[in-house]
Length: 276
Ligand SMILES: Nc1nc2c(ncn2[C@@H]2O[C@H](COP(=O)(O)OP(=O)(O)O)[C@@H](O)[C@H]2O)c(=O)[nH]1
Ligand SMILES: [Mg+2]
Image (cartoon, rainbow, N blue to C red; front, side):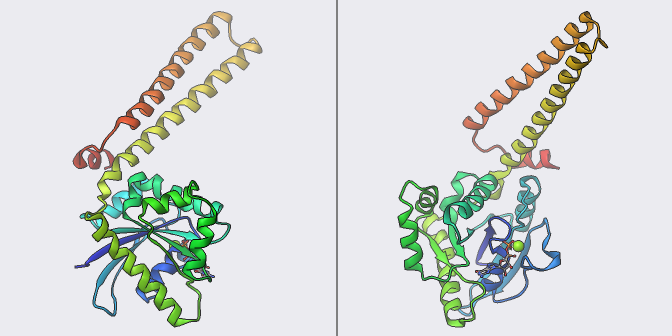
């Protein structure tokens, strides 16, 4: 039984699997260069640290689909996640960070930061230098805002370093911050809380697909009318039908936006049924 379950989240190529390997002192996770890395499922691995702590590490694929990834995570760890590591490749800080930040929020919602540790990979400088680089971005910068929401839990790692001592220091510090999440937050991130997001993503996609189809039909009708393949009477009748349908979809979209703004979590069973 793991004392701590955590997931690594972030854009493909930012170093999730490499970090998972560094943390677990293993080669269990397939890093980007390997052929099999084009995977769409969650990889998990349980390991025990030298201090005797047993952790379950969940490495998320880069191309996440909420409808698949969230139920998969919930099946692996039904009691939820103790912590989430947001993996950001340290490069041009702004661009690189945005991709991983939106990945986190798209999957888990804005409330996820209370459970997060922000880990910068490809980082050859020390933590003080990283923090001063971040400070230069200003406190209104989106990156600094999520760092603040994560209670300043920021770490760094260079997964390719040959300096074993340095790697150990970074790994220990990341483990320390991951453990710190549960003491600071005092509850797990319940994966089912994110389930309505998967349901919404599916509904939104259906509405958008219907919209595109009807819009194309209307366009086609117009062009056939201009080429005199359709009578004026038929054109008027069909165009009205299509416009009414499009208006209905527009209303549906508006309702959903409103609903999403007001919505709190719905029942776990109901959502599970929907996703089945
Ligand atoms: N220099 C350097 N390269 C890294 C680091 N972390 C990962 N990489 C490389 O970046 C590439 C993508 O890493 P991977 O762990 O597969 O990323 P993922 O797609 O987020 O799982 C691989 O070629 C890794 O060797 C790091 O900290 N420093
Ligand atoms: Mg990977």
